[in-house]
Image (cartoon, rainbow, N blue to C red):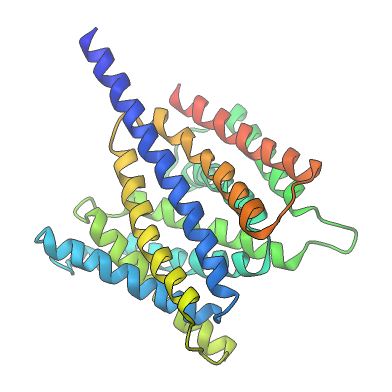
Length: 292
């Protein structure tokens, strides 16, 4: 009985860490959207990545961990780098070009893509019920995108590409060597953001700007929040049962939509709400089946 109560307490604490992580991620997205209104996307990526990498490097030094180990160059880490660059670049572009609520809703399909990718890449068993839910969740993404007779909104497709990049990163992380600590994964993840910024700057050729005080404070806060959210997420996944904690990822939709309404005056239509419901319900069902 005592073991059960301890397990329930761990799940409760883990859920709290997950909710906190999702709330901070939503604030980070809001701040980055403010930043890209005054600063080129490439410059924002470079500053954000450099700041986060610096914080994780300091964290590794404090923990007396080396900043480079041989496993950083392993094949899974190289694949992770490619997907990290893709996810970060297109996600920030999506924040710049689309309503925050739309981007947040599409991002919620990431766990569904991860489950499908695990079945394809790692041979994990996924039954017809979960495949049906994955397909239903993708239909929800289409509903959020609201394609017209003229085709998809090309700007909203950046959110889809960002979501696919993050899903690929999560899959690659599962194959990454266990010798790599959370701080090292965070360090090289943020260095990948710098790479994404440099690549996009070369392509975009936008002139860098000297940020004003408000933009500078938003960038600093976004960087700190990004590191804090990543740490809270890792804490959540290591406290309690993963199957009990992971469903609380979907609270990010509530926080993201709320920030969109409060800070950017966004509105939600019935179609948008229906698409969000399809994505979230499909994700929760897939997690429940995976737990069984």
